[in-house]
Image (tube, rainbow over all chains, first blue to last red; front, top):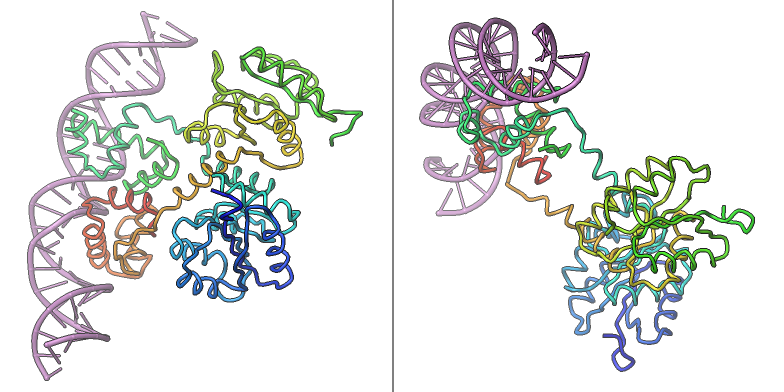
Length: 217
Length: 217
DNA sequence: CCCCGCATCCCGCAATCACGGGACGGGCGA
DNA sequence: TCGCCCGTCCCGTGATTGCGGGATGCGGGG
């Protein structure tokens, strides 16, 4: 809980000296927030985390750091301070970096061009269970999601064929599929051949790969 | 572009009469925004879209609608009005609905408990290329992402075995794998057997499925 | 120094596979 | 009513596979 008596501890990892100091000032000036420590690289922060008796609740993290990248630092920081929330604060807005940061466990993603007031707002948001993101970043994240779930592609598989394909994905052989579906092996064979034709493959592995990649079955 | 002369058109689809009217009032009162149309269900909105000569730039969409669900409506609305941005405005905050809405192409996701001022802010955000999300929604989205990239699981596969597995995933048969890797078919065979053992499967399909599901190779 | 584990390579066989064919009934649109 | 598609069933052949062996080279530990 954020109170005046016990301000939330925010650490900053940022290699640009003046920007780092500016952030510290802003955070310290914000009611209920304090920035008791700041570092110019991940290694120093990790070392401090290992010995600190007062771990931070939130870390503002740059990505373009000398030495260990902020991206690589995220999992280690989280491991060193379980429960800590990481807000990435960077100039990068390419999908790859956003994606990697989020997958690594970042809770927020801001751009350095943001007004400083947005930073304290973001910290409070994170503390309140939110995930602050710059608008463009949010749009990108959503787009990645959309792309992740592409058209369920329809190859015109029949119900039966989908059932057979499902069991193929589970690694069953024809004989097993036949008894599972209570069919003759020959019938299963025909279905499999039709699946191959519809999926434009000619091996089990190809069919299974296509089924999984395109979320059929 | 949002100007006083040409306000951005916002449509509202919401079955609760008073809430719908409240939104219309708020949007109409906001400078640069106008809500020239509102509907109680998707079907009506779709019909209006089909004949309208002034399609909206943004649609505020409820999910719990009578008839066609807002979730199912998203792709149709987008199809009927290419370029329209959908902001989901609902009481639901379960992962499934969020996920489906985003995958269907929603640009923003707000909760009805939000102060109305947040709605106009969200509309402007969307118009400016952003993707407004309630803080908790954003957190959920990020968590979904994190879960999407689970531990790359290690079954102790050797370099060679990974190479073979990769080609298996591509649907090649042993002979093809052998020539691709410049090995004897017998060697490939042994590799495959070792892969089976390490992956605890005993069929090609099982191995391919496991490789794909756990992002090996 | 020798043994063990490991990755790599090889052989042979029975089981399984892909695929060419053919057949039958039921549903559905022309 | 007549096709046509679909799901079901069947045969046979030759290729491919899974698996039982066995062998090589190479590194580390006793």
